[in-house]
Image (cartoon, rainbow, N blue to C red):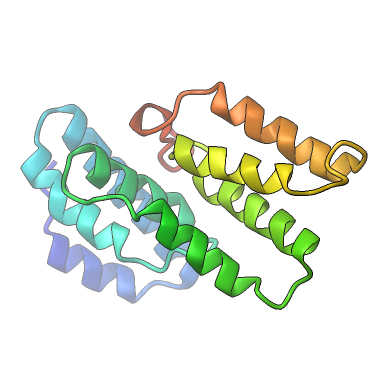
Length: 166
């Protein structure tokens, strides 16, 4: 499963955005297969390229997040400190009233780290608990229930899904 990465990246760059997303998913599948076969050194360049793609692009999120998770699990990348993530989210939502800001931070933590970081999910619960109406607001209650459910699931590399494949 040798992949000429440079040639493949040139080919991918010429595709439209949908085809490009599918091609990156194929690369992610190739990298995960290499890891499973014990060919970690062969998978690393692919994972590094995929991890550097735009994480806010909805079409690429399906490859960026698993690539980062693999790199972290393989000890090739350190997770972003939770304090930095929290600071960035608070800065992003600083114009909102406190109750809306806490919901936004908790929701962002949950959506971004649902299957990846137990500490981020615990912090999301802290923000939910800061809301006085948490018990009476059905949306906040549903978010808290989703967070609790996620905390009961596997976290990390064992939960990564690659392009619809497990």
